[in-house]
Image 1 (spheres, rainbow over the protein chains, first blue to last red):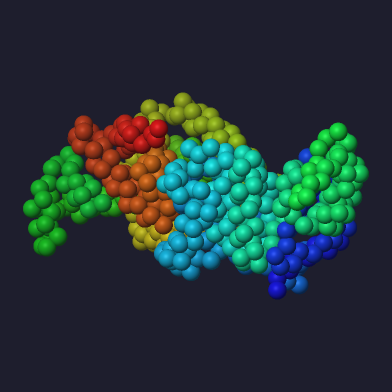
Image 2 (tube, one colour; image 1 turned 90 degrees about the horizontal axis):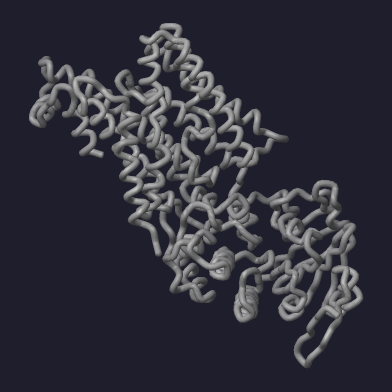
Length: 255
Length: 310
């Protein structure tokens, strides 16, 4: 059983303390949300957990082994990350992009295995991209790009999905349907996700465990009742947040 | 490739026929034609092909690591450094091997300088690297102008030829072929990584690329290829910038295809350009850099226009 363990983690960027003594454990098939206001350090924390950013103190362990002891190629099979931006550089088509997700698993230098190609086409289908397969990335809309980036991450088939603002550029319908699809795939593979988002309602809908980052490195981890507490959230975001509960969902709004 | 080589063997101040060529390969003789072929045409053709191929793969690599469509093999000031080395050698009356060595040393010095200046705590940011490259190139440009304006007219002629790229003195040896083979094999082995790196450094790392070592390998290889090309033929412009773009535009975006195609097209392109350079106003010769631009510019614009997607 795979697990990702954040132990007494301290993280800072240019003398700004992002988190101090942060502890949480992600095990199989869990959905975590990472909440906090703009600039509090959500992206930096995700990058650290992906092994892309040095940590100041503490440790991040994947299956009881410190991240530093993995090489990048090993890590890419276990942990995949969706970045906020940066697909557009040199020209590529959507299918070429999605195929890159198979890079950590590629067996041959030259040939793509049929299995890899099939996975890429399935990801296109899952995220309503089939018709856009041969389109150049730079001709896509923001939402289409975001779906293509998510499809690439899905073909990577990691055990831990780190999603940085997955709902970016997506309309309300896609926000829900794409995340539903991601959760379906997570359940199928017994994989887990940690999603950084500014949308508390989306987090409440899709996640069961929460990390809340505050200014000055303070942080809280726990389940819905503990973290999605109007007082705690108001404190974290610096504004008055209220909660409304229906039979199936909870909603948060500004007073 | 084969066509371009044949074309190059046969054209020049003295036209040879295809039958002479075939006869010569089967039964080498001592006629004027066979001497021209053996001692001038064949070595020059091979030099043109090798130089073009090296510039083209170097261009591909630079565009990927800098992820900037304007990147070319000379963007980090390599040609400027080589030019100052070569021009100084010409000024001192050197030619041949000494000139080449001076250019090579100048090229490597310039690369070292750019990396040294833009280095901060062992890391380079792409923006800083590009800006340093441009500034250092501008500095070399000034030195080149000083050398040009203060030299005798005799020297200036050969300096200008060198600056525009000139293959008339170029010879390649086993080292060039070894380097080109290394480029082809290495390029193919790294082609998947290049595909991933084309999407950006963060994404590449997220997909399992060891960025530091890949980047170092690529910078070293590209610098070595460019320095060698510049040393062989002067700063031939255009090939390294445009060949990779042409291929990408017509669909060779995957580096598993792009790498070998760049070698073939880059080599063939420079071979043909050089053949034209010595035939258009024969018996006089044009600098090959002029011809690459004359053919390259309209071809590139045509491809660019015809592949615009609505």
